[in-house]
Length: 329
Picture (cartoon, rainbow, N blue to C red):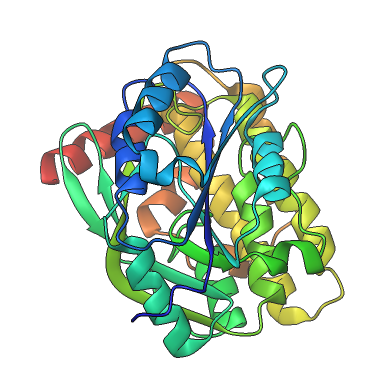
């Protein structure tokens, strides 16, 4: 491929990533594709992340003119920082990268080549996940239509994340798709579902280009809290309201998504060191609005734990289940 006319924007929110930002930035600046714009947003990170980033930018003079480093006046959160990236990027396509992750050096070149071959609005690809003890490839369920992608995300066959996709930038602006300020957990879900709905052509490959680091202890997704769980519910509810009246395909998928989220959050509550009895009551209240068929696709063991009426018994059962899983793996 010798045609570099397609401009790719890479958007990176930066907060509390001083251990990871050098690895991330180097993987971005050493891309083999030349026509890239980089948009970093400093969300008033309290550590040395920006100092480290600036030192790396200084080393990559060939990329310097293509880099935008925007500093928020105060800590505004991930959602607002993503909107700032949207407002400042100018590429034909947008690639989201979290600052504690990194990508293969031929990622942009390879993705542009695939996109030009299939003329898709969204291109999904594989991920290598890195935890503290191991790494493993995450091969997403392949999807080739907007409804395929929608269902794949709703059934958790693929992540509801923005990273792991090359996205046509105009999809955001033509359909007024924005992140909701202050909703910093699950903000990806609402946006990626709407993008899938409005996309005309979607394609996916199993090739691994993205490296997702699960070991960052300050990541928003690394621990459980009721506040974060309620943010996730807010984003599910808002998105579900958008799809109300759009047909049984979407409505049925959201009911199953609700059931899965209820059971998943219950188990996370039970595994957490703190007690969350009131939140469990909230989840069970939501469950009463669903039907038995909505829970059919949930793992049998998880359904058993969901049905245990005693909080202490369910908590002990979850701990035993976790120990067995760790022993098997």
